[in-house]
Length: 262
Image (tube, rainbow, N blue to C red; front, top):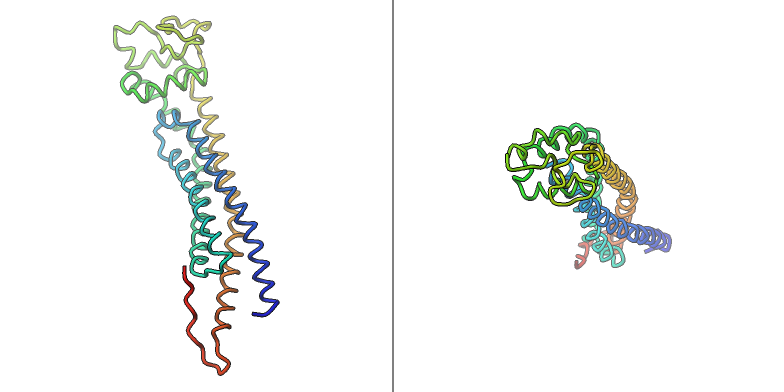
């Protein structure tokens, strides 16, 4: 191997080592951000039942875990010149690039339509499932308490809920609508006692912010992936070229390339 080629391989490896460090940090960051968004909007997802929103978060989390796994593969493939493992590493980088691009595009498209979906599904869930489904009832109560809101569009939505069709219910709104929560505090609907504003606007605002965050992180990191893919391919080709030359006999006959152990 010539000194020029050796320097070329050393330079590419140095760049890839830097990329690997950044790559691993981004993987950890994606997992951290994904878990934070999941926990922050868990009750929103439970009430909304949106496949698009939950898919974006789950894909985002899977991508973060895959980034960490591929970073480990890169640490084994790059320093020891394992070409087969390096080839797998490049394929995984391409896969992650496509996944990040998909998550970013999906998040961008969905945040444009989330408000309409909220108006349709959120109100329907409040009217039909409160006190019927334990999980959804808990999520609705948590949302109303944390977001300081009541109902979907306003507190008046509760007048049409199946929950209030029960004659034994004396409340006008759930207790979670109260500014100071106590047993059956929802019997008084005075503005000094309950929140009048609906939950759709604040919930939509939080979910849009989370989607924009996922979109920005996913698309931004997909651009970083391009550098890893380019330099990974360069290193793979140089290693294959140097291996070919080292196995080419002076008399013009080509020997079989030695198999590298994975």
